[in-house]
Length: 250
Image (cartoon, rainbow, N blue to C red; front, side, top):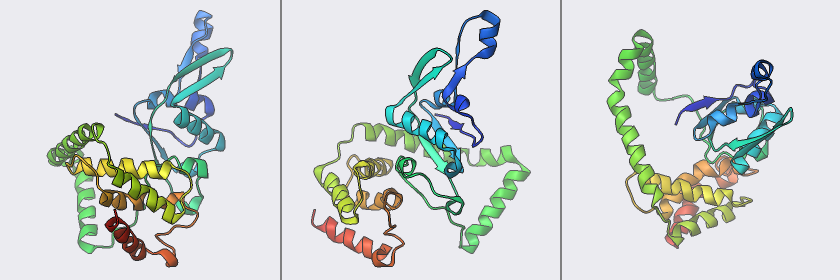
C-alpha cells in the first residue's frame, strides 16, 4: 500500500477523473483520465486539514466510500472503477468541525497532544536534529526496528483473516454502545474489528471483551453528541469502572 494525498485545492475533476482533452484533440477519440480516487484504490487516501474540504469533494468521498466504486459522467463518457481505500485525515478542531456524515466514516480517532515529559521532549529534539544532519543515516539506524514492526503487522493481518470473534466480544460492543447512547451500528462493528486487530497485533488468535473496552476510547468519542470521556458526569475513571463491572458479567 502507498499513501495518496488529496490536496485541499483539488477540483472535482481532479478527484473523480475527467476526459483527457489532449488525447481527444490528437486522436479525435474520447478517453477517460483517472483521478485521485482511482489512484487511491487499494491504498491509503490521506487528507490534511480534512475539515476544510469543500462540500462537493466531501460528497464524492462519501459516495465512493459507501459504494466502493467511483461513477463518472463526463462529456458523454460513462465510466466507473473500484475505489476502495483507507481514509486517513488530520485536522485542527479549532478551525472547524467535520460534517457528521464524514466524521462517522472514520473508524478510529486519536487526539494528538504535545509531549509533557521532559526526557521525551529532549529525545524528540535530538532525533529531529539527527535527521536534519543525516537523513539517510538516520533512516538506516531505525531500519531494523521498522522491519520488525512491518513483520509484526503482516503476521497480524494473517491472523485476523481467520479470526472469528466470540459472542461475548459482540455482546461487549453492543452493551457499551447502548450504555453510551451511540446511534447506528457502525460503532459496534468498528469496535469488534478493532478488538480483533488489537488481539492479532499481540499475537492472539481470539479477541476478548477486554480488547473491546481498550479500543472503545478510540471508536466512540467522535460518534457521540457529547464526549463521555471529557464530560464531568462521565469521566474516564467512571467509564472505566463501569466497563470493568460490565466485563465481569460476561
